[in-house]
Image (cartoon, rainbow, N blue to C red):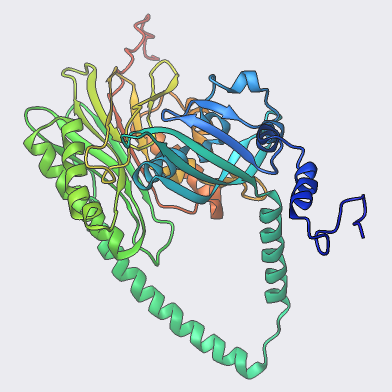
Length: 449
C-alpha cells in the first residue's frame, strides 16, 4: 500500500532506507529557507546592538527593507519609546548578567506607524575564551495573545458587574468594606508618615537659585520607590539627586533609605556626581546583588554652583540608567541633556556612568523626573505611553518658566492622566533667577491739578 501522493507506507515495507529517502524527498527547504520563512522573527546583533542578520519574516512584520536594517540599525531602533526604556533599564542589563532571557514582552514599531506586541527571547553567543560575541534573538507575534487577554478581562468585568448579591451577603460585604476602609486609612496614615521620612519635608533655600519639587505616590497602600534630595556641600556648591528604586513596599523603602544616605555621605566626601554614583553602585552591589538578591535603582545626581549677582549657574550631572534631564532655556527652547552610557546602579560591580554638564543662564530651568511621568498611559484605551517627545513638546509650550511654574504645569499634566498614571512620580526643578526687566523711562505725566 501507498499513502496519498505515492509516498510508500513505512509500515510493512521492511525497507527503512527507501522510507528514509521518501521522507527526505519531502524536505525540500534549505536551512536558509527555513530561517528566512520561519513563522517567527530571527535576528542577530553585535554586542552594541547593531543588527547583523534578520530574517524575512520579521522584516515583513515591520515593513522594513533588509538593506535599510542590516549594519545600519540597532535592535533598540526597532522598539517603541517604552520598549527602548525597558530595554535599557531591564532587558539589556539582565541579559548581560544572565546570558539569556525568555518570553520578554516588548512592543516594536512598524514602518506604517503601528505597534507590534511581541514576546522576545535572547541568548548571548560566547567565543572560545568566554568573551561575548553576539546576541541571537527570537521574536514571536503576540497580537493574538494580547487581544485574547483583553477579551478575557472584558468578559470578567461584565460578569462582575452583572453578578447580584443576596441581601444578607450585601450587608456582610458592606460591613467588611467599612472595616477594610478603616484599616486602610490607618495603614495609609502609617505609610504616609514613613514615606515622609524617605524624602525631605521641604527644599532648603539656595542663594542665587530657585527650586521646586513635587512627589506623587501612585498608591496610598504601598510605599513609593522614588526619592530626591537637595543639600549643601563644600564651598558654595549644592548637591542634588533624584531616582527610582526597584520594587515597592518595605524592601523598596529600605533600599531608598540606604540610597539616600549613601549618596549624601558620598557627596560630602567627594562632591563629584560620578564618584557619588560609583560609591552607591559599590554599596548596592555588595549589599544585595553579590548576595544573590539583586536590588538596583536608576539615579541622576548633580552638583550646582549658583552664580553670583544673578549670574549663570554651573551644573554637572551623572546618571545611572535614568531618563535624561530636561532644560528649559530663557529663549523658549526645551532640550534634553543626554547622559548616554549610564547603566542601572547596583547591578554590575563596575557599572558605567553617563555624565553631562551645562550652564543655566538667568531664566534657565533644569527639570529632573522619574519614569512615572514618561510611562504614563494615554489614549482612549490607555495603550500609549506619554513618552519623552511629548514631554519635551509640553514643556516647550511653557518655556521660559521658573521652577515653580514648570512644576505647577507638570503637576496639572499628571492630574490629567487620571488612572493612566500607574507609577510613583518625582519632579525636581532648579533654575537661575531671571533678570528683572528694567522699567521704561519715558516722559513723566504730571499729576492732575
